[in-house]
Image (cartoon, rainbow, N blue to C red):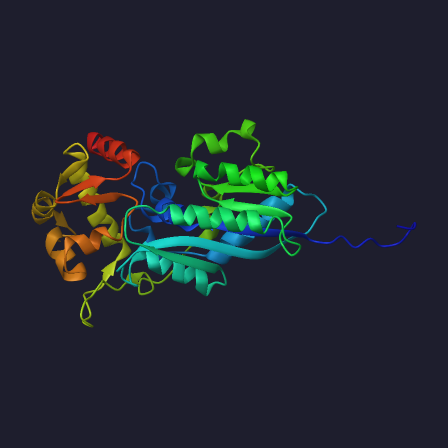
Length: 313
C-alpha cells in the first residue's frame, strides 16, 4: 500500500466443529472426581445454572484472536455432530442439549443409532472438517471441540491443505495423545473450557432448570430435575463399582430399590419418571452398556472414579 494509505485487513474465517457426544459426556455425564463443573458448582449445577452456548463461541473466538495480534477473527459457522439412540425421548438431557444449541444458531446434525457404536458421528465430523478445508467458501482456521484422539488424522489432513487448527477441550476429558504438541495436529495453544466456567455457565431460575420426565402413550410423567437425574446415575454407577463394573439388571433394580435419593426410594423415582430402568439408562449411553440381562460400566475411567469415590466415603 502507498504511504499513508489505510490497509483494510480481511477477517480470518473460522469454522467450529463440535463433537457433540464427547461434549455431552464431558459436561453432564462425568462423576464427581473428574468433573470441574461439579467441583465448582456442586452435584445439582445443571438445575440452577445454564450453559450459555453463545458465550462458548465468543470465548473461543476471543482466545484465538489473542494469539493473532492485529487480526479480526470471524466465526462463520458452528457445526455440531451428535447422536441419540433410537427411541430416546425428546425430553432426555442429551436431546435437550442439542435442542438448546440449535436454538442458539448452531447447525446441529443429530444422527440416530440402534447399537452402541457412535462412530457415525466421528466420521461425519471428520468428513465435513476436511471438505470445508478444500472449498473456496470454507475456513482459514478450523476449530475442533473434542477430546477424542481419533480426529488426529483428519486434523493432520486439514493442515496439509494449508489451514490452521485449534483444539478446544477440557483437561480431565481429553486424550493425552491429542494434547501432545509433538503430534503437530494443531497450531495454537489449546483452548480449555475449564478456564471459562464462570463465563459459560450462568445462574438460571429453578423453574428453567426442571426437565420433563419421559412419558409414554401421550401421558405426562412427573417432572424430574437434572440434579435428581445425576443422583440416580451416581447410584447406578456406585452399584456397578461395588460389583466389579458389571451386574445383572435385576440386581441393579434391587440395589435402587434399597437406595434412598432425596428421601425417596430410587427405583420408585425411576419408574415414575421413566417407566422402566432401560429407558433411564438410555440417557447415559457413554456410561452404561446393556448386554443381555447384564449392565456394564462402559467407561473404565468411570469405574475407577467410582471406586475412588467409594474409598473416599
